Each structure stands twice: as structure tokens, then as C-alpha cells.
Amino acid sequence: MATEPRTPLGVLLSAAERALAAELEEGLRSAGYHDLRAAHAQVFAAIDAQGSRLTDLAGRAGMTKQAMGELVRYLEQHDYLNVEPDSRDRRAKLIRPTARGWSAHQASIALLVDSDRRLSERLGDQGLRDLRSQLARIGHGDSAS
View 1: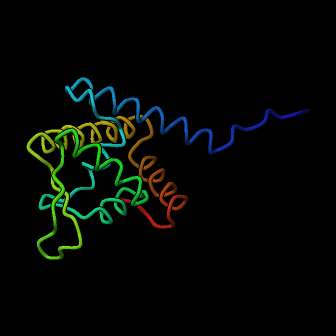
View 2 (view 1 turned 90 degrees about the horizontal axis):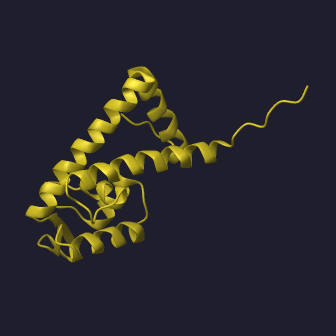
């Protein structure tokens, strides 16, 4: 008796990522942010209130400095972020949200929290904690909260 081939895990993970990104983008559009995508929410989720350096943003978001740099440039060009020299280290740049950026930050965080709530309803609190932990192990070898 032949068994059906299992869907490769990478395919399932990609499908889940696309579904979550689509929900986030729909939420951003509904909130009036037609020029933002799911990837931009990662910037807002990673940025500090007093501003952040590009390398810190990239590390928190789990992406390359180059990829984060593209997102930051886009957000700067669309008046969501200011990029200025860091007063503590003139070689570094400090990235801060504009007033428009803070509004998008708040919307992004609320949408991400709501997404987690819906996932918790579907998977259960422990199921969501387990999923986070396992994905963190796969992605970068540490645990997530």
C-alpha cells in the first residue's frame, strides 16, 4: 500500500508566511497604509523609541543588513522614517520614526498582536508557544518568547 507523499516542510512554511503576510497587508490597507507591506511592519516592530541603528534593526528582524537597508530607504522616502547621524558615533546612522511613522508603528504592532491572538485561538496558547520555540530553533538556534 503506497502512502501519499508528505508536503515538504519548506512548502508549508512558505504558505504559512504568505498567509500571515497577506492578513497583515490587508490590515495595513484597512488602516489607510496603502504603501506599506508586511515586511515594513518588521521595521516598526524592531525600532526603539529613541531610534535604532540599521545593524540592530536587521538583527532584531532576523534579516540581512542589506535587506533591512532597502526597507529603511523605502520608509524614509515615504516619510515614515528619518535617518540621521548618530550623535554618539558620527560614522553610524540613527533611524527614527516620523510622526507618520509612529502612527504606522502603532498600527503594525496592533495588527501583529491581533495576528498572534488569532493564531493562539487556532493553535491554543501552548501550541503557539511550541510553534514559536520550534521555528526559532530552525531559524537561528535559540528560543523565542
